[in-house]
Every structure is written in C-alpha cells, then in structure tokens.
Image (cartoon, rainbow, N blue to C red; front, side, top):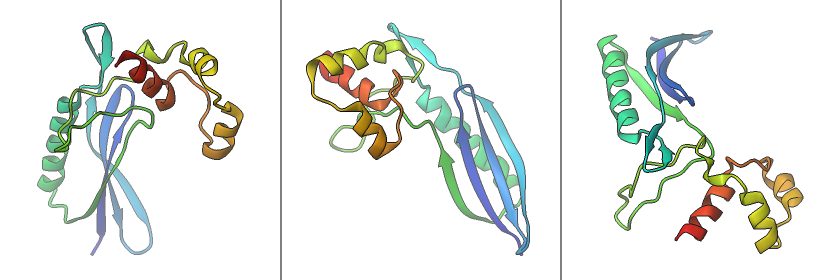
Length: 146
C-alpha cells in the first residue's frame, strides 16, 4: 500500500497542495489543488490574506480526501520572513504584513544608526542576507511604530 503525504506550498502569488505517493521504491508527485495568493492592500499596507489561505487549505484537503487518499502526513512550506502577532490566548491579532510591503525599507540604516548590530556576524550565524524583507527589519520597524 502506498504511503501518501500532502504538502501545502505557499508562494508569493500562488499556493498549491501537492500529494506524494511512495510505493516502497519510487515517489510520485501530483498537484491536487492550486489557488491564487495575492496580497491585500488595506490602510496603506500589503497584507497576507490569512483567512483566505486557511479556506484554500480546507478546499485542498477536501479534494485530497475525495481522491480516496489515506493520508499519512501533512506539511506546509511558507514564506520565511513574515510573521503574525498573537494574543495571550494564541489568537492572531491581525493578518501578517506581506513581505512585499515597503515597511522594511530603510531599516538597515536605522538599525546601523541606533544599535551595535554586526550584520556580517548575523549572516555568518544565520545565513540570512541583509534585505529589506528580512524579519529583523520588519520587527525593528514594529518596535518603532509601537
């Protein structure tokens, strides 16, 4: 009997659900479902449409179940630089701001001016490039904003 796993892949402009089937010798991949993933412009910022993405995940899972798939596991691959704030009970406070939003622009200079951060050392330790879309710049911007 094949081992079946599902993986959601969330890209900047689309998402998809992939199914892998392992028969003990080979892995076969099949796209189960694809959907648009467009940022939402609201109140001067680009946001991820988090609730829409959750809805699309449910649609994809229903399609996989309709294929009589006996699912062994489910994983997700998402963007690596964005985040959401949660309250004390774990509820999301707002949709995550999209990495294509320009709020990180200029934060590299601000951090250099205001702190003693060694960007070369950060790169050596994390492998993360110094780019405006980095979580570090977004988080720093959030501390200035609040």
